Image (cartoon, rainbow, N blue to C red; front, side, top):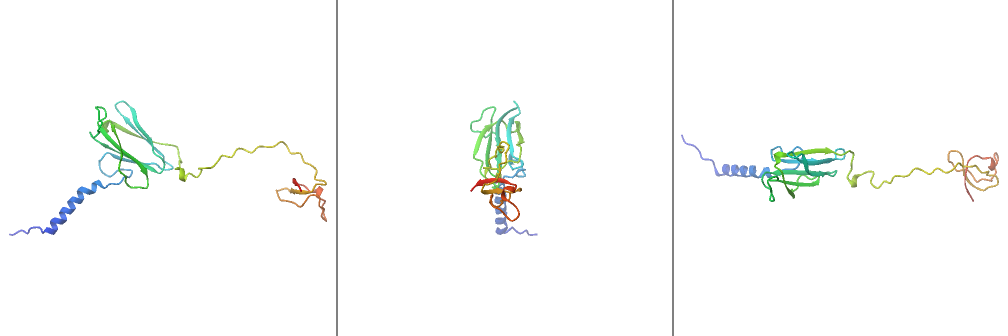
Amino acid sequence: MTTRRPTTRLLSALAIAGVSALLLPGCVTHHPGGNQRSDDQFTYVSTAFLPVNITLVDTRTSESFWSVEVPVGEKLVIQFFKDRAKQASANTPDLLRWEMYDAKRNISPLRNAMAVPPADLVRIDVSYREGPEYPPENDPYAGVAIVPDPVISPAYEPVSNEGRVGTYLRGGGVAASVVGETSTTTRADARSGTYLADE
């Protein structure tokens, strides 16, 4: 029985598939819930109704060593790298890389770095600020001034309108005719209302 050798096309296709499988895991996006694999990467998105704070705690001492308030509309991505800190010490051998950027973007390089305690000794505390909280450009109350309570003037003493010429308001705030005019039914000084101004 003779066996056939795979053709070069099949080998080329397998080689391309193998290279793609090696390269694609590096092309990840930053979403809450992670990349569906164990890479010590965490993403936190701050929204108007859940503005988030992240605090990293060294469980050996119960002290927080890093904390950030993520602005609304942004996301924070953190990733731990074991024994990779350039300025490592016995207490901080691991590297933490992080970035904060617009929540609408899928990915960004993690440009910030710091030496941290071993990742398995770090607790990530997540807390939420009281909401709703809006980013400055979307805040419906931005630029709204609080109006002080109106100043109440002393009791008003009605003044007789007899002989005055001007505009007054009838009950209900409707402007009436000129005071001092007479009509076929009512004299002006008998009209009721609030006097506004002399003419």
